[in-house]
Image (cartoon, rainbow, N blue to C red):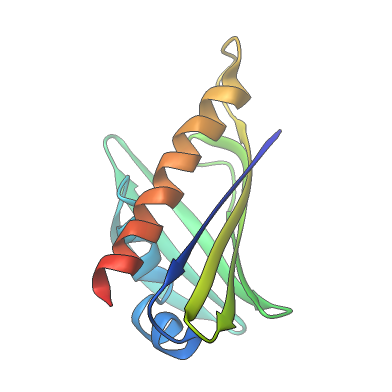
Length: 134
């Protein structure tokens, strides 16, 4: 399992960011998948992400001042994937931070390293989309 962290200051409030980037918008902003379905399950939102030859459910929950999401079930490219999205509001905008831990499902040499590299690119695209929106 590998962990990646990316952050960026965005010229918006945390409320503006969280209202514009709900779970489906986050999946789209990451750039690897499109949203096939969204459903609410009590305190969680399930976003079914669709990509070339696969669909995977992502479970989003609000936890201790962060949006937490994980690949649910055994479908998808990861053996395990969990991500925290945190907003730290400041006078000059909001520091947005993604932290993600990943483990690749395929038995490849350096698989977790490859998964972390791919995941970091997705999270950087999401930060770019957030910054470009405001």
